[in-house]
Length: 282
Image 1 (cartoon, rainbow, N blue to C red):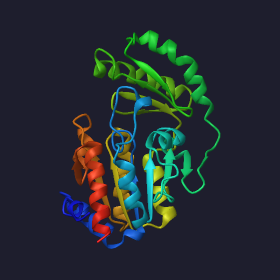
Image 2 (image 1 turned 90 degrees about the vertical axis):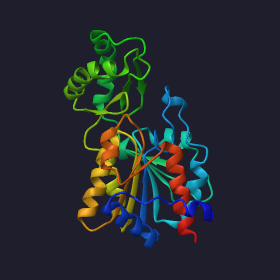
Image 3 (image 1 turned 90 degrees about the horizontal axis):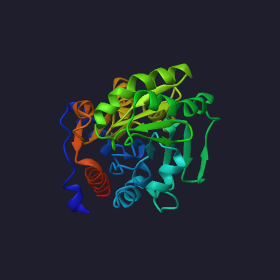
Image 4 (image 1 turned 180 degrees about the vertical axis):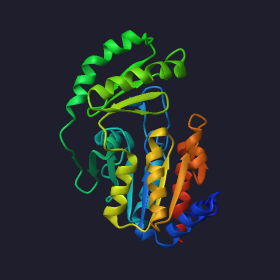
């Protein structure tokens, strides 16, 4: 394992270096927060085919017992992230939590159960109106919807002009969401319509406070991870060091610009987790 310890990268910012130092000094008081798609799992054309990087679970199982908590924070339903991640019944991941639907759902490895409130009624109304909106905008055959239970996502990655379709749909979908008390969360060639009041920042902040953590790492790849980055920055202002990691992508330059450390996609995230576990295991 020492070979991975030697690969522990150095953050490019003073705040990031302080965050890493705090994690190494107080691992038992550290929360590791991780997005799923694009961070633990490579981005694929069909989200239903997304699976965690093959080395992600072994890396997490080695790291998790050495820190206070590992939390996967995702817009997916918690049960889907658990299935696609392969997180259930893994030795070493007994204290893993998955905060699904931006924290509206919670899965605990210890119990194997998902807890969640009732769905927002606006989601069903949007689901009924969405086909007409897509027809009115002239969304092409490459544009498709993903049912997420507590949310509905419209993907444009398969369209002939993915960015053009994304921009054409953004305004109409924002209006549709607002009529039903919902919001639109933009991502990498996807627009997700979901209830307000929960985002990855709210979910992460709540979990850090719940665990009384004294250091935090958060890794993400998407616009939806910006609130989590902001949450870490808020914690830093309160004296809790944090490390911001971007799972590198040219599609989301804003996230990379705010990160303390940019790694090469899910493979780079896995290598970081391995190196961190190795350093803590010395």
